[in-house]
Each structure stands twice: as structure tokens, then as C-alpha cells.
Amino acid sequence: MGFHTFDPESADKLEDDSRYRYLSHEELVAALALDADESETVADFGSGTGFYTDDVVPFAGEVRAVDLQEEMHELYREKGVPENVSLVTADVGDLPFGDGELDAAFSTMTFHEFAGSGGGDGQSGAEVEIARVLREGGRFVVGDWSANGNGERGPPVAERYDRDEAVELLEAAGFEVVRADERPETFFVVAER
Ligand SMILES: C[S@@+](CC[C@H](N)C(=O)[O-])C[C@H]1O[C@@H](n2cnc3c(N)ncnc32)[C@H](O)[C@@H]1O
Image 1 (cartoon, protein in one colour):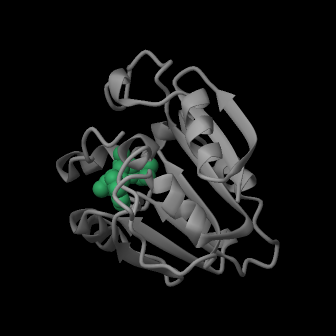
Image 2: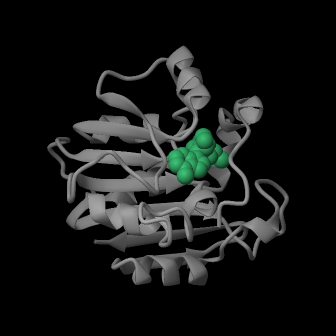
Image 3: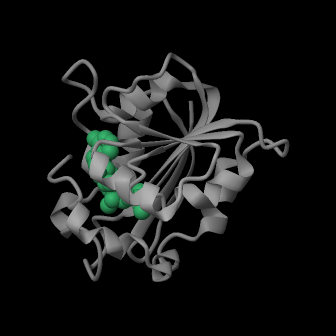
């Protein structure tokens, strides 16, 4: 969809624990289903200030925080970047990763900013590029504001997808959806490559 990219001037809103009301770190980590040996390589697409990145870090071997805007990485640096996190400045639609390089990936409150457009070939959505860089069986977990929400918080309702639209995009990109929930203001989808 990609109506607009998040304004770094509003980044303080991302560092607010009340956000866990819409997506908790427990459900995010559980849905990723990472190996217990904490050795896997995980990417956070549209990582912003690293609010949710930090929640996944203790359960992964390596985390790649991918964001288009260097300003967002700078804010993460000011907060303190954990040792096993690398900051990658890139468009999710054109990732500097090899085929099948990632074990798992997630994206929080950002799917509406990159899905459905901007793939590396200039036609398909970034979800196609995400499918390329995930290994077979690797999970992609998406939590985002839903088009069925009332807009009390987050981007304008007209700029959002709902669960069914997200599922359709992910399936078209070659994912198998293993869980898809529509909640009061957000949707939550777990897909496997
Ligand atoms: C609404 S913020 C959410 C940040 C973080 N996921 C969180 O929940 O705290 C969206 C972030 O995604 C980034 N972003 C938007 N479109 C992107 C794209 N196509 N590729 C990489 N990053 C993108 C923005 O720069 C911004 O930092």
C-alpha cells in the first residue's frame, strides 16, 4: 500500500509501553516459534526505534533490524543497540540478503507501509521479497493496524489492510498462513514460507 512512511519526528510515540495493549511481546515471541538454542537469524522489517526488536533479541542468535530511514536507526543507537543486532538501512522491497538466508522474520505496525508495492522487480509487493530471503519453513509474523479498526490510534483507517487482505497478499507471495486473527484494532498473521 505504502501511502506514507512513518515520520521520525513522531518516534517518541513508538517508545510507549501502552503499545503492548495492541500487540504484546509475549505473543510476538511465541508466534515466531524460534529454536530453544537461541541460534537463529531473525529480521525485523521496519524496525523503527527497535521497540519490538529488543523483545525478540534474547530468543535469537542474530537480529537484523531493517529500516528505510537512517534517522530511525540513529534513534535506536541513542537508546542502545544490543550486541547481536545489526542495523540494515534498506527498503524491505529490495533486501541486501541472499535467498533463504533468514530463519524467521517479523514486522510490527508497518505492513501497510510496504506490502502490495515496491518489490525488487518494481511490480510485486515487498512480501514477495520477504518470501525470497526466508528459508523454507521459516516464519513471517505480522501484526499491524487493521482496516476494520476505528482509528483510535495508528495510521488513517483508509491506509490499512485487514486480516483477509494481508492473508491474500501473503498467500500470493508463496506463504502458507498458519494463523490469522482479526482483533479490535489490529490483525495478527503467522505465515510460513
Ligand atoms: C510505524 S513505524 C513502526 C516501527 C516498529 N516496527 C515498531 O513497531 O515500533 C514504521 C517503520 O517502518 C519503516 N519503513 C516503512 N516502510 C519501509 C520499507 N519499505 N522498508 C523499510 N522500512 C520501512 C519506517 O521508516 C518506520 O521506521
